[in-house]
Image (cartoon, rainbow, N blue to C red):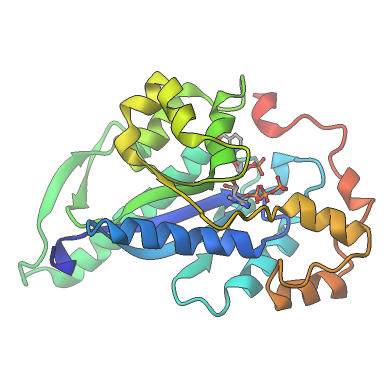
Length: 269
Ligand SMILES: Nc1ncnc2c1ncn2[C@@H]1O[C@H](COP(=O)(O)OP(=O)(O)OP(=O)(O)O)[C@@H](O)[C@H]1O
Ligand SMILES: NC(=O)c1ccc[n+]([C@@H]2O[C@H](COP(=O)(O)O)[C@@H](O)[C@H]2O)c1
């Protein structure tokens, strides 16, 4: 398939990134290889979107530090960027709404490009229901607007089964309008989980499960625990992130108690 015929994809990783680890970065590489190996996709961009403080997860440190660490971790990447839109919002933003926001941005970027290209006849335009943006109006989208896919670990997919954590409509919007790339994680069985859910099974073509053959149990929880114990976290995180944590004395026994008595935002709805 010629490269101009491939479907462009933008990968969006939503998470706490408390702190960002090498595994978070590796997820992007694994997802890009997997999609591009199918010969059908061209991954054009990766976005790291740290969750906002109003998510109030236990142990979450301030978003400004999490964003700075994510920026340090990605500074040498030519395709992964960090966007602080989500964590600038006053309230916690459900993931379906985050996807809606970035999908809207992709459409408006394409429309700007399209205006520039006007007269060259290079781009086909089509009218599409803008269901993704939750609007009843019809807006112009280009046929080659990139698809936006949620990049996550299999634990996030399996968290769809936790009562009241996700709205069914949000799950449906994510898997039907956008799609997911899901990286296997030890203790998870995403294929089985998809098979056992009628909704996920219906949209299984949109859920790309990527097997990480090198078992990699790096988690932010493990990193924070090591830091509390004064143990080294070098090589689990990019060096500039390790240095930033040391310089700012992040992740202590005290910070682990942040939001300890608060109900996680999705459960407050
Ligand atoms: N080792 C891993 N394998 C696969 N996916 C991972 C791994 N570590 C993190 N992820 C994924 O990265 C995304 C962001 O995760 P998050 O920032 O919550 O990190 P985490 O390590 O799971 O955090 P915590 O340990 O604090 O719960 C999630 O989709 C999560 O599933
Ligand atoms: N209903 C929802 O949209 C919903 C529920 C739980 C977590 N999330 C998102 O998942 C990401 C990862 O959260 P955890 O770090 O708690 O696994 C965060 O970005 C969070 O906003 C979304």
